Length: 239
Image (cartoon, rainbow, N blue to C red; front, side, top):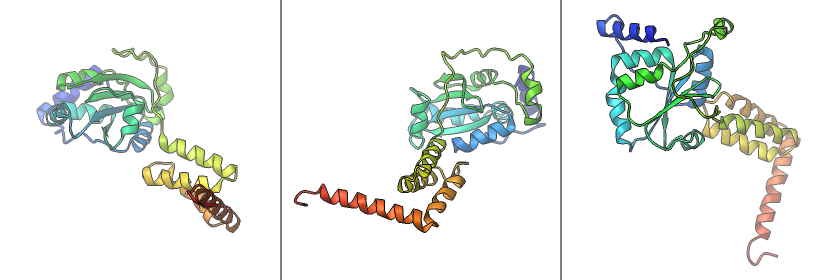
């Protein structure tokens, strides 16, 4: 979003022509990545916690300011990251303090980050570092236009891992190698921990391809029995 667009959004909200509602926070990072790619927008990750006082104050003030609400909803796909629920993402992003804001491209590359409480003016300034939305139909045309360098330059582009994709990749490898028990276990972990992820459907298909095939399922049972036998042999007093 350009400076002009942000200013227009603020004026419209102030005049009552486009009343702001609330920031449309997403809670699922994987789903938000898909939404961002479809909309041609970057993501705004807000790393917060229930026990974080500045996070609560920022939610009650900054993210209730009409101009900020309008700018966030128009310029980015916002994601509220709960530090306790999404500890893996906190670790992957190298978060050291709360709240922390990160602007992230749809393919997972960091554009800018900011630590600590930020008021409405500071968040508005932070959002100016986001590239303008790029609808899918004009992706190539926009790519030809020069983009200003972000005010905060990162030492290196970082990519946030996608645990659902990693689980699915490992499950595919297990399936191809005939490790059907391991494949079923990984698929179960995937759709148990990430039920809304895009990879869940394929994980279910992989698991079904094993459970519905008598030969494959027999190999699962044989592996389970072998594991149980090995466990029993490891018990004290067991010959």
